[in-house]
Image 1 (cartoon, rainbow, N blue to C red):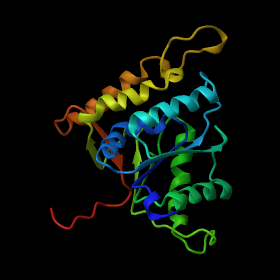
Image 2 (tube, helix red, strand yellow):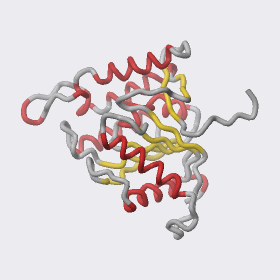
Image 3 (cartoon, rainbow, N blue to C red):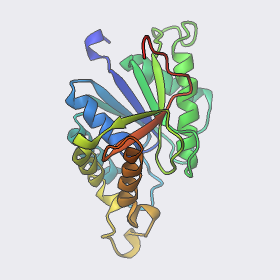
Amino acid sequence: MSENNSLDILIFGAHPDDAEIGMGGTIAKHTAAGRRVGICDLTLAEMSSNGTVESRRKEAEEASAVLGLAARSNLQLPDRGLYVTPEHVERIVLEIRKWRPRLVFAPYWEDRHPDHIACSKLVQEAVFNAKLRRFMPDVPAHTVKESYYYFINDVFEPSVMVDVTDVYETKTASLRAYRSQFEPAGTGNDYVQTPLTQGYLERVEARDRLLGLRRSVPYAEGFVNKLPYMAELL
C-alpha cells in the first residue's frame, strides 16, 4: 500500500460502537484537522441482545460518515470468542501493516466486558509483533509510534486528555447512529432492556463532562499510555 493510503490513527474496538463511545470526539477532532483516521472492529457484534448484524453494519457506516473516517474494516472474529491466539494476533498484525498508522488506540485493559479486555490484549500483542521483520515476513513490518488506550464502560486515571468540546455534537451524532443499541424503543421478542438502553449515552456524556472538569473545559476524553510521555521541552 502506498504511503498516501496510510492512516495517521488506527483505532481497534471489539464491537462497532466501542470506538465512538470511548473516543468519538477525539476522532472527530482529528478528522476535522485533516488527519486520516480509521477504525477496525474485531467482530460483527453478532451476540448483541438487540439489533442484527445487518442493522449494526448500517449503523457503523452512518457513524463512520458522521465522523469523517478514511477507512473502516471488520475482521469478523467471533463475538464473545476473542482470545489471545496466534490466529487472532496475526489478523490484527496484518491490519496494522496494511494501514501503517502512526498511532494505534485500543480499549483500556480493565472493563466490565470481557471482549474489551481481550481486544486490549490482542492489540498490544499485535503492535509489538507488527514491527518484527521476521514475523510474517511476507508482509513488510511496521512500527507504531505510540499506543493509547481509551475508556468504554469504566474510567481510570488518564495520562492524556483531549478537549473535545468543539466537536461534542459530532460525537453525540455518531453514537445516536447506533439506534438498535441505545434507543429504548423496541418491544416484544426482538427487544430486551440492557444497560445500553437505560440512559447509557447520558452516562457517557456525564463521564466526559467530569473528565473535562479536571481541566476546566466542558468535555474531554481520557487516554492511557503505558509508556511515560517524552518531551523535548516543557
